[in-house]
Image 1 (cartoon, rainbow, N blue to C red):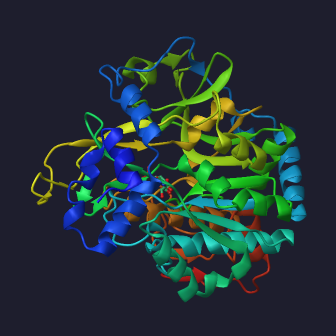
Image 2 (cartoon, helix red, strand yellow):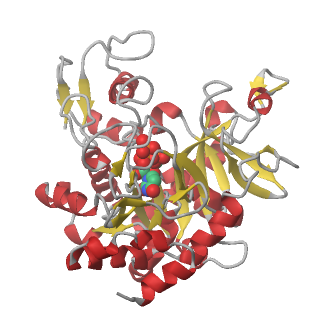
Length: 473
Ligand code: UTP
């Protein structure tokens, strides 16, 4: 049966997508055509010619690469007065309502191996709150502190959109005002064979997967989120990942640096824990700020030291950014030198054989294309990188066990709560790593950072006894 879309795929050399079309029910045929319509064949063709050509994976251009400058924290020699001005400026922006929170939650979370949207994963040490609840309470608390409730944008994927919305509805939006929480789906890209042929996942569906966290820029635009921001007087998005409950998702000093410097995209760095740590590196090249992934930076450079025995490429990226609304629009609209590049990742992609039988490959049989949000940095005017403390901003849940796992994250949350308590005069016993001997948890609505915790703690009279499973709310 001729169909203009099928013709188009055939002319592009992608006719295999419809190999089993005649065997599908009318409903399944309709769904396959719908998926096919999502695909930009010219884009796939371009990516095949650039990213799949021989030699495409051979290293990046290292010419003129240098470590990016960053604003040191006051305790590490930074300018205390400038940090204090930044905090004041950020607080003013929060009181004016010009900042919104933005979570990217469209990933597949394969490493964690958890069934369901990652944001629904239970993460806190005592109450076992889900990730989404932790962020919701931080956002609610910040809105109360600055007298302006915040908007929260959440990017989902096709696979988890409905489940995410249901989860929020079931939990009454964790106390947030429903009209201020906005969900939108990110785009998808087809997986292709190593020679560029679009893969089927089943006889009636294409192997489509989310287009990377960098897809958030075009999804923000397409979904109308940028227009909504404009109507609401919101200029700045506070971008963070769904797997990091430690993040100070509303951080006045960070916001202040961004505003004072008229930055279009700002980022937080942490000093790398060790030379080989698998993080992106903030660098400069030909006057631009860029992030170079650990896999692209030669090991000798990752290990290079400066005089004081400090790593030369010290600044690690932890995927926390501030984005200017009109900058996002400019990036989303694309155009010469502005659109985000795609990266390729070879993966084992479940597919079908010539007879339509399911195949679960043992080795990589195809390539997925993804965009990364940090690739927007070189296009941003006045980008700022500020230093943050890992212990106050970064403990992601990536793996089921070992590093960056639910266990390490719970421990890091408790270390933070213990530090806050000790800073307020509580004699709390901890081990050498600062982990308390007791299990405890602080609700973000009680305190979500040092300042808000101190304010709330001072109001407790008498303060509660420090016992196991203490929950401060
Ligand atoms: P990761 O790079 O950790 O990927 O995402 P992931 O898909 O969550 O996990 P793995 O690699 O399959 O185990 C970092 C952040 O970017 C979001 C994720 O939801 C997470 O918050 N992300 C990633 C998206 O929103 N969309 C994507 O396409 C990819």
